[in-house]
Length: 317
Image (tube, rainbow, N blue to C red; front, side, top):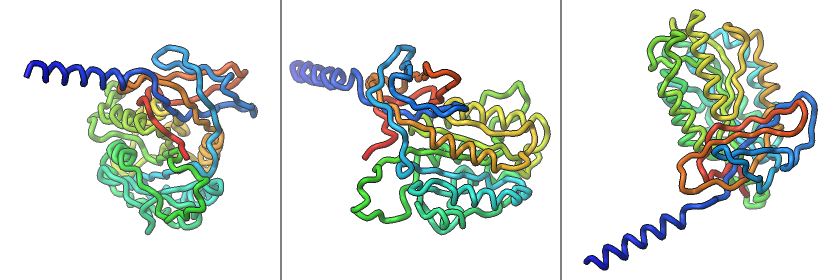
């Protein structure tokens, strides 16, 4: 028995050692520059757990390798109706080959806005899923519960792709654009002294594990908590935490609703077009590793998620 236990311990130790060491890992990094620039791996300085790590490759995300989830808070004020045509124009204006899903956040989940239950490259059909939110106080319960569930159960394609289309990536780069007030009702007071929500933090981690950057547009909801400067500040603060942690951007205009979302839609489309897939080694024996990116290009910045799970794949054939 002693020999058996010793052999089992040695086998377990050997298996654990086999899992240690570097493993190929991918992350989405977004270019943020007012002047067009040709980017190469040599222009990127990547730090994994504060150690400079060379890139194995750096490739732009192709339009046929993108999935965009447009998630609307079902508790938004019905005044968002004036933005519906711009939302539809945003969906139909995505680059050909892009797959899109339109969903509504309600009661801790995301439900499809139309008949399609998954992503589709038929942009015109997807635009038909855009509807007026319910506009009921508390209809969304928490946008963070809904988002967390969505990224962990990312829907597949609503279409049966022909075998001839094997040139398109199997695992596509995933992006989320949320329209919400960002308030976390489950974290209690919206006071500036209460801006550390465990639910927001958990959602950030879930999106990081999935390698999904989360972008958002602030728009107030129909509930009492959706009104007032403290609620606006709280919601925007949480959305900023979400974007900073995942490599996205939180769009807003002051503490009120935007005059128009069209400029934000345009900025988001440009952000997706300026996103690259960075491949690099990361220690497989860690659950998550810290990630930082910088560049030697003038007047240029890059965004990426703060942490990543070693072995993450964001784009593959």
